[in-house]
Amino acid sequence: MRKLLLSVLLVGFLSGCGHPVTIGAVIWLLQGDKGKKRTHALKILPTTLPQGLKNAAYPTIQFTATGGSGTYNWTCTGLPTGLVFDPVTAQLSGTPTQGGNFSVTVTATDATKPTLKGSRMCQLHIVGIRILTTTIPDGCISVPYSATIQYEGGAAPFNWTWSGNTPATAGLALDAATGVISGTPTSGGNFSFTVTVTDNDGDTDDQQYTMAIKSVLITTPSLPDSYVDATYSQTLTAVGGTGALTWSWSGTTPPGLSLDSASGVISGNPTIAGNYTFTVTVTDSDTPPNSDSKNFTIHIYPDLKITTASLPDALIAVPYSQQVQATGGTGDFTWSFSTTPAIPSGSLTINSSTGVISGTPQVGDEGNYTCTITVTDNITGDSDTKDIPLKIKLVLVITTTSLPDSYVDATYSQTLTAVGGTGALT
Image (cartoon, rainbow, N blue to C red):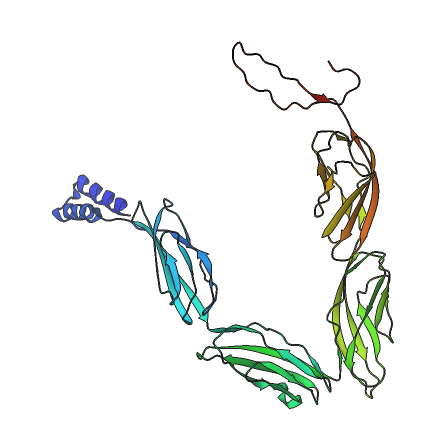
């Protein structure tokens, strides 16, 4: 912009419209530009800081800068007591001993170009105590109930309180010292409330919860996964209710499995792999009947099969490595391997995690073997075993690895060695 204005003034003067004021303006502009330095901003990362816990180690945060030479002078202000900033490594670490909200400003200045600098201000929240439990289970009328609110940090003793639509009206109580909600519900209902904990330093945290007290309650937490053609049997459980319970399900149920309405047993042999999510409902015999419903998911995996049909020959004194392949299952496998007859040196083994057969056969190992390979799924228990032939061959191999040096006129004698081959060696 200054260059454009200067050009206009000079053109005006040279065309005969010059005036001492015009000349003065040109000189002022030129003088005004002298000594001015432009400041460029470096980019500082990260842009946010994670929440910390008082008297607990804070995760090490590495600050970086871009847009300069790569060598910077670092400063940091606004930290709570206990946290430190290393101006050499630009790392923030330590154990905060002070809670609250802090405005932390980190500044980097280019070591070779001091006009290059940048700052980043981040809000840092250090809490004195933190509630970890985010949900609590439902309860059932006339069935003893207990749920403990977990937390971290804080200075004992603690004081627990709750507010809102609490299940105190249904017969439950919150222990002010331990944070345990317990009791035997006497009535049903839906409840939404806030639990607050205060420690000896006056630090607090709160968490909102919702729960229901029901007449009948499904207590099965989850159902195990399985695989195609497996024998599957799982019994659903419930508490409460009046008289006999009746079970039913709806949604996408696994083909090959069925639910017994009287016993709540899911059984059968899954026929199609896939993810299946469905709703199970239990109903009692009261008038009117009471019921509870819960969603479940079962993953049916393809049947586990070893697909490797053959193994390449192995050679004496030559390193061997071969991957055994399998399909189906969860992918979390354990492999085992044996041979008939046993390889004399035991030189070939299988990696139990990867299924790679490896090793270096030794002289005397040559022969024909049957490898019995088993893969087992660590999640579902599915397994497959396969016998694969393997031949270890003795080929002509020079076994001398090196020869010693010597000197002029010395008597030198070294014998080269080899294994394998047929007949005399030349």
